[in-house]
Length: 212
Ligand SMILES: NC(=O)c1ccc[n+]([C@@H]2O[C@H](COP(=O)([O-])OP(=O)(O)OC[C@H]3O[C@@H](n4cnc5c(N)ncnc54)[C@H](OP(=O)(O)O)[C@@H]3O)[C@@H](O)[C@H]2O)c1
Image 1 (cartoon, rainbow, N blue to C red):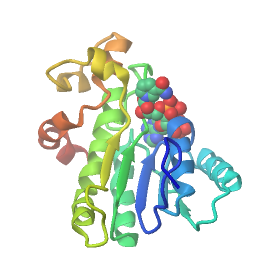
Image 2 (spheres, rainbow, N blue to C red; image 1 turned 135 degrees about the vertical axis):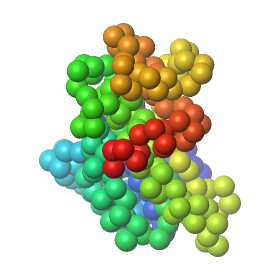
Image 3 (tube, rainbow, N blue to C red; image 1 turned 90 degrees about the vertical axis):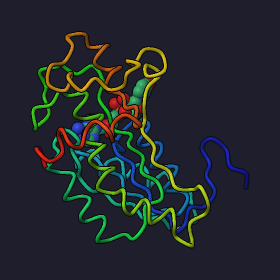
């Protein structure tokens, strides 16, 4: 079978995390991986929506390969929910082949701060996924070096936006907007779609130790 945009080769033995799997791109991605035999962790903040999504995925599947799908709750706008997930994940899995940080918000009211009081787009799209990635970085590195991992097959993916290519600030994530956001919803949305390269340098010392 040749791979296409929506058909992956079997992924048996591989472990995948997809955030924001209840609807949209995350739901479609979860469906694709479920059909490949991977162990799929579909994270979501809303249990009812997650179980509805699992029903849709499992009943629609024609796959003959046996897959596992797990629903752990994470609310990326509440950093306190992320470490417990990572702890449980690491107690259950010895590898992580794909981490897809897909969950995100756009154009929500700026007054809707995260639980830790951060600007909602920055907090949900950047800080939460960055913490998740950091907590899982060791297992990602181990997976890359494992003897049963195909070369260059491990992936850390962030769902971003065309806005990053067209109009995100060239100097990277403007961290001052975490606490003092622009009033312009488009500006804050384009600032808060991650440019992963800039996050590791900027975030840890400033926020992580204070909030989790
Ligand atoms: N679709 C587009 O045209 C487009 C364009 C540019 C960028 N993007 C980005 O691509 C990604 C997927 O797009 P989409 O259209 O599929 O988005 P979507 O339909 O709005 O779905 C977003 C997902 O993120 C989850 N989510 C939101 N806030 C969360 C939080 N605090 N904690 C955990 N999960 C949370 C949502 O969960 P709930 O169901 O609980 O709300 C939902 O599952 C997003 O990051 C989006 O910003 C999409």
